[in-house]
Image 1 (cartoon, one colour):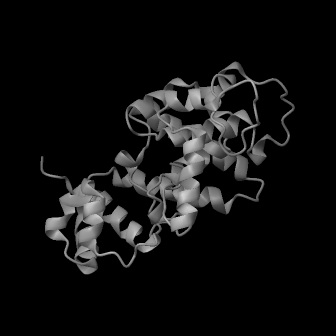
Image 2: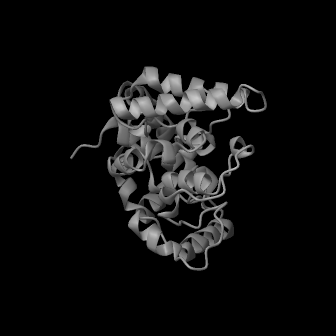
Image 3: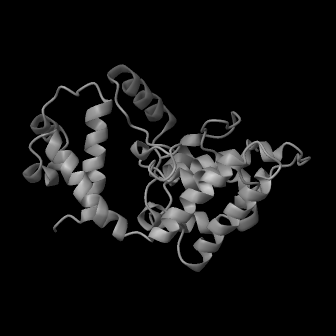
Amino acid sequence: ARPTDRSIFYLSLLLRISLVLNAWFHTTLSTFFRFFPFLNVLSPRVKNLTDLVDLSNDSKESYYKSLDFDLFVRFHRNYELEQKKKRSTEYEQVVENNLKFIIAQTESSTFPGITKIGMDDEQFKGQLKTCNLDNAKVIVTLLHAKDPIVRFGLSPFIKAIKAGQLHPRQFAHIYTFERNRVSALYKNSNQTELNPVLDKYYFEFPFDRQNSTRNSDETRAKFGICSLETDQKLEQLAQKYGMKFRFGYQ
């Protein structure tokens, strides 16, 4: 099947990032295509780095047209306001408003994932890095809002994962933050007992309390997340060879 402009944009952007970030920058494009066959769809149109930049830019316009661009801009603006108010008395209400907007979009249509509202774009908000290929403009709100899973249930999140709108690792971060009450907005909370819905899974992600009686790999496998041992080996490889395996919260 002919690749779509969206897939070409993703692939070309990914290849540009890979060439810049990893230690194989001196490697020729043809060698890179041989190592990563899934990128071969680009090879007939890309002979050098200039071709790659042109292809990415040409595809970007079509990519934007495939999105709900009004929502794309709205979520970037919501993120911008949330960050601006972070140390003010208005922060909690801004986060709450942004959370309700995310849930409203989810209930009326689908979870606002990157296939609907696009990847983060630093042209719209400088703190968001295009090279992370992420959706932090939505995920950050879910990390710092109070009790999004307890209040709205697991169902919308599981449904979003199955629909490809929410990456399993993004969900694991959200779940872990809420389970361990990481957000500063919990500081005045007196809750001591763990809600049953938050005792269902254990991912052993950053901020997760150690649990000697549970195996995080069982939960990870259910969500298609690699084992903790594999995660650690990938991190070692990334540091050793200057490669990038993690993109934002994914």
